[in-house]
Amino acid sequence: MSSFATFFAALPAPWVVGLHHYVFLSALLFVIGFFGVLLRKNALVIFMSLELMLVAATLGFVTFSRYNGTMDGNVFVFFILTVAAVEVAVGLAIIVALFRHRRTVMVDELNHLKN
Amino acid sequence: MADLFFYFFSALTVGSALGVVLNRNTVGAALCLLLSLLGTAGLFVLLNAYLLAVLLVLVYAGAVAALFVFVVMLLDMQGGAKQRVNSFTAIAGMGALVLLFAGLAVTFGPGQLSAPAPASSPALGASLKFYGYQLFTTYLLPVQIVGFLLLAAMLGVIVLSRRNTGSEDAK
Image (cartoon, rainbow over all chains, first blue to last red; front, side, top):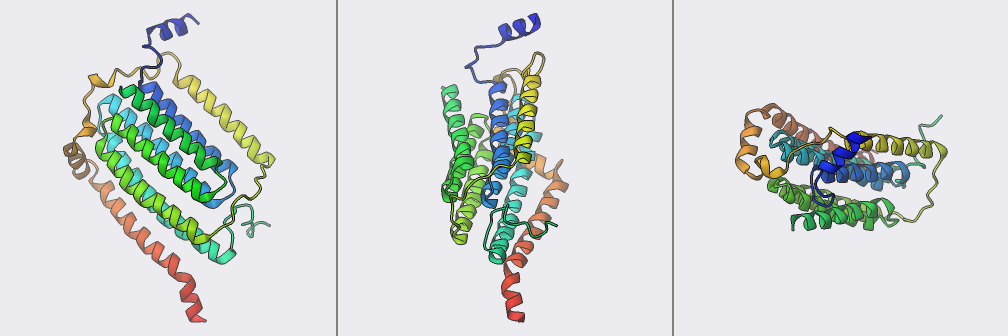
């Protein structure tokens, strides 16, 4: 317990923005996106929540890249952005095709493969 | 001053992310996603990753969010459907919350995340030269793979969106 106390005493004031704040923000964004995927039934909103999770991971990459003085995280964000754009294009095309075929995008009504 | 900007942008990002998840109106959710991405771009500027901030606004806010708005308006869905949460989803959510708190407790405990202040490490992400150098030396193969992926996705989207009319023509 005393190690905790000395640890927190050595920290700067909690409102001074540091690595912790960015990591916490990234985790918070990821969790919001995760619960969006979990709780929503609209396929489009699920897709938007997936994008939120990708952005949260991106924020983590940029943060650690900045605080470590390295370049690799920043370059990796390039590839994340490209893959996210590809994923959105293909995914939205699939959703549009699905809507043409079934007239709905609610995931709990898309159960034709069940049983 | 930079701290005030951090709190402003993070509040914007998290608030609009909550708006994406909680908004019943799908168009509103798409616009909240756009706002959240703009807030994230502001955070990237605070982290000295100027190019990535511009790319995020161009690619995400410009292309992805606009595509979402287009598709939402194209599909003309009726929003406000009832939200039912089954027990499996509730259990998964509880598990996710437990994992989140365990991860936060480990991450923010003593001995972790002890990075120095950003002023003591160089802001490599601020300069375009480093991006170009890395992309054309260390990451040359991933760049080519990603280019091929873009080509494949373009062809796939064309096939996906043409298939219905093609089959109707065949009939």
